Amino acid sequence: MSLTTPLSGADYLRQILRAPIYEVATVTQLQDMPRLSERLHNDIQIKREDRQPVHSFKLRGAYNMVASLTEEQKQAGVIAASAGNHAQGMAYSGTKLGINTTIVMPKTTPDIKVDAVRAFGGTVVLHGSNFDEAKAEAVRLSELHGYTFVPPFDHPLVIAGQGTIGMEMIQQNGHLDYIFVPVGGGGLAAGVSVLVKQLMPNIKVIAVEPEDSACLKAALDAGQPVTLDQVSMFADGVAVKQIGSETFRLCNENIDGHITVSSDEICAAVKDIFEDTRAIAEPSGALALAGLKKFAEKNELKNNKLATVLSGANTNFHGLRYVSERCELGEKREGLLAVTIPERQGAFFEFCNLIGGRAVTEFNYRYNDDEQANIFVGVRLLEGQAELDSIIADLQEGGYPVVDLSDDEMAKLHVRYMVGGKPKKPLQERLYSFEFPEYPGALVKFLSTLGTHWNISLFNYRNHGADYGRVLCGFELTEDDIERFSSHLEELGYGYKDESDNPSYRFFLS
Image (cartoon, rainbow, N blue to C red; front, side, top):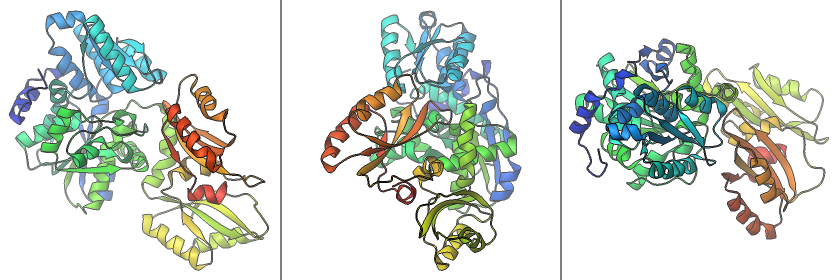
């Protein structure tokens, strides 16, 4: 089947109905979420794709394409590039069909994912430091050895396999008003939306993306697929720089809406899923529910029947630390503030009285001078943003300068763990945040590229069990250094951001 001749909606419907995926996949439950339904005043259900043999929906598309190959192609073997769920779906499919399956995975892939692919019967080749380098190697090997390359999303047979989820959902509940689907490369959204619009076009299909990995939104804005400069790796299952050409065509024709969500909102959705189902979703697996919640609130939906897809649960256990820390912020149940208080006995007691007896979740302080102190404080909220606005107003009225840091990523990720020290002398310092790949030699590369040329004045590293970490780094730089320093940043090749004007840095570290 070729991408050069686009299939119609009716063609896709036939492909979905003919998909032999139930030779390996199961019809997963569309489960009620009673606690969340009561809270949001809508009937909410979640499609449990975490219950597939490989704990994600990717098995459907992978098997549908691999099973369609000719006997000659099956004998030659198949190959794919993936750092996660597609890899496991491919390995499982190849084993079931007796086909030699090779998966090229980046060297940065956590051992838990590599071991899972091998356990399902796949041959793993570790190559490159990111998906693009792994994919290039997979394509090279396919041409060298005659393997069939199976893409993770941008092929009609893969899309049709994922579309079987939509078929099951409308069979399980034919009265749905909305279906929310996550978007990475777009295979799931394309398959579900084309199926729904062929059979029950009254159901609205809403696509959901992370704010910092929104390749579909960029394509919709531009009218065609475009490549993002960088993507966040928090929800690594949907961290795709460019949506597929065929998946974009189908999404553009069939989805009814689009919404983006923050990492904190995804963390809150992970918690919601656990509380209602006791399932532990990976961040990309909870993405669509985060979009459902935000869309329902934004559009004041009441008494609607809403469904979403728990697309996967292949999470690294240590990554749950980050989710636990951030879910309260994602639900607006915690606020983070920088408050200036007078440096005298009893000042903290007076501050606590001003916030009205609310629970203080965090308090970071270190003596600065004899006049005043900057404190980093977390406050438990029962009524969300309105309550936080009220607290800020009370503090300002009481004469306490205050800055809301609840949406300040640097404050939440780094500064809250660093409060307590400032340099004893003035520094010509600039601050940068980096996404730091987790592979041998990454730190040496960082230091050899930057640290041997300029003095590092501040360094904080955070990793939450993912295949990347977060670094906050200060450098002593003069104005004359900036141009040369910038060229070294580009040479380094890591994602970075200038944080020198960040308010939490100014309060607590500069």
